[in-house]
Image (cartoon, helix red, strand yellow):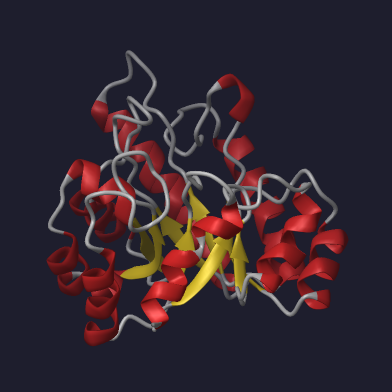
Length: 259
């Protein structure tokens, strides 16, 4: 049976953020993830993790001005110094939270910049981040995002992510495989994960359409979870979905898997 981590950015939104750790524990989760920890003191987050016996599975590198629509800065020429500062800040939090993997949202490609420049910018930034994270004993992940939800996002498919990984040449750089995004961009979920299992360090789930909990859409999650067990995936699965209604009521999909 897969190990599920509650994404506290998406789940238990009926509660203040720091109260979501206890709610995740009470719902049976052993791990948590969320987009960004930086709005909170790392000591407060570490205290919640320890108090409720939770593993910090993942968080993202700083991603620019989120409120103004930025979704990462690794692809933005001229922002390299800011990117490097963000890497240092992310490592500082990861150490405090004992988080062993960090995701880099590469960002929306800026208009008017040629592909060669964008590619060099992303590769150089990822190479720097991977080097710094390796010294800290942390994996670096990159996540393909569908172009329906975030038009213009630079990284959209598994093949693109694998190509970037090859170009960067770092042995601690992996794919974060989000099933929802992959379904919208390429499908062929089971075979893709099986073929590239060695390059996938983390999986996230939501159904399509709607990005709600597994079992509400077209993806055959009972089959997919059994497939992941069968092929030997032993990482965490982040529940990064929007509950269709109440978070707790929507968690019955996990109970059905165990039935």
